[in-house]
Image 1 (tube, one colour):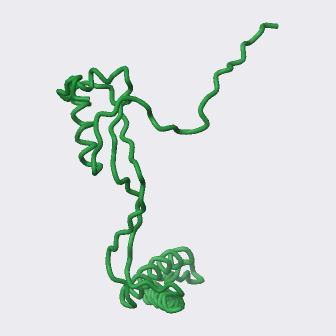
Image 2 (cartoon, one colour):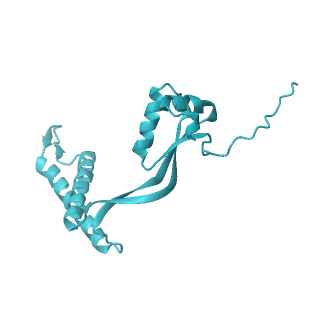
Image 3 (tube, one colour):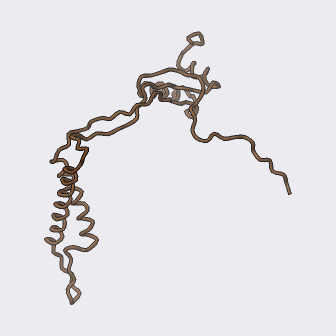
Length: 171
């Protein structure tokens, strides 16, 4: 039997914050990405550049008002699509005669769509009315950092500073 050496090197349990030389702090993400674009254009390896967001906050942006009209329209559209799927699955509006002929009755197909749309609208309006946390707006949430730092490994710090035109005495 051959002796296999077991690796004693411990791997990190998960992602870690990159360490290295900071090339700048920026108040928004766009400024940080502009610096990264300059570094990549200057032939710095992209895999060595990191943007680190500090002090994350949750920002909720209000997109529009929410009332019974929007809720009803949303329910109508959802009900219509559910009705369309149901009507296609059960073959609503298609009859097969005893002789083997097929007859198409579009009024049956469309009646399934209308009833499903109405039920969807009714369900959404009732659900909105019964909601305990009735909000009058639609919003979306996203995490945002208060500042962004561009970091490169110490081995590439000199090359990055040359690309950006930063002298060593500027520290």
